[in-house]
Length: 352
Length: 117
Image (cartoon, rainbow over all chains, first blue to last red; front, side, top):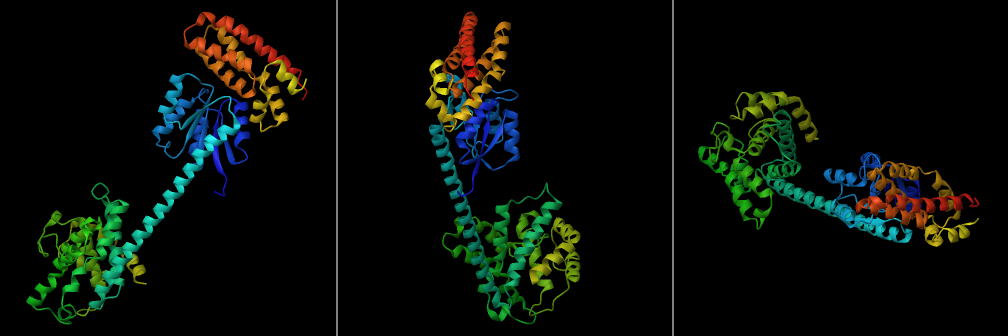
């Protein structure tokens, strides 16, 4: 670590603070506090900056044990090693110090060489753990990004067949995330998705049309209306997507599988049960499948297709709200109606 | 009086104590000179007179820590004896223990006053 790290020295006696300050001043930035309350204030004012606390036990206002208790309550002791520096020699009290979460207890009078070693070792070890944690987090993120981009590549390859560019895939991801966020903002007690869930749903949304790979070109790219027989085949892209997902070895173990399976199968279901393939109704359809369905319909309307020209954003929203594309969840309709402008802007940005 | 003479007079481990001040004699002298101004001993004296055990324990404990770091061994030992007396319920011994501590505290004060800056 090139940068100097900071330690906090807490003692009501100036002489004791001075000695510790001299002992550690060459290698660390020093903060000082004269009692437990000042120490807590100081820790709060320097979040994540302090790498060790050297804490006296007997102090006015708030003693060292109380500081340990409070830090424990705030769940800070895991990242912040606290050393008790004390003239205490009663076994019972030393035991209490360890039980409250002190990393080590060092007796006064201190011996500078030993105290530097004992505290330095712990700080070094913590630095190592922190560096490795950071590396692991970075690697996990890289793997996730790679994962997402592989999925996008696959989905884009499939979209190419029906004359779509990769934009549709990217816009579905963005629109899905946007609609989920709007749902959470508008109905916070009803809908909540954490970061992990949002990521999985967005990845799964990208795969919604995977099953189109199994639909013949003559149907997929037919300029005119599909015959009833052709439409029946077209409809199987939902279940074919699931077949494809099931054929990928070990995909089931991946948390994205459940979302992807559900979204592939149910992104053409409708709130009134008139969708396909299962004719699910209302809340039988998961909210994420409903959201992808809406995003898919909207994106299809505002884009050009072999069988239609592009509609404007306003026209597309009107058509959906009028029920021309099937019935959707009233909560989603409310979100769409109230957040039209946001959706329009997001869509434009996505288009570029 | 220099530091060596002071150490001889009041049983100070001079090397160990100097190490706590990064080997700086000037710094050790400066903090020794501050020691008689510390109010902990006064607090202890009043608490002993008033029979306030909790304060006796707390002040003796604080004095013990400071004396330990400054290398004032007899003061440290005397304070420690007071802490132990309170904790083990031997209140009757407190006045006598305090008199011993007072003698060592005053001897340290006299030696420190004679210390050349």
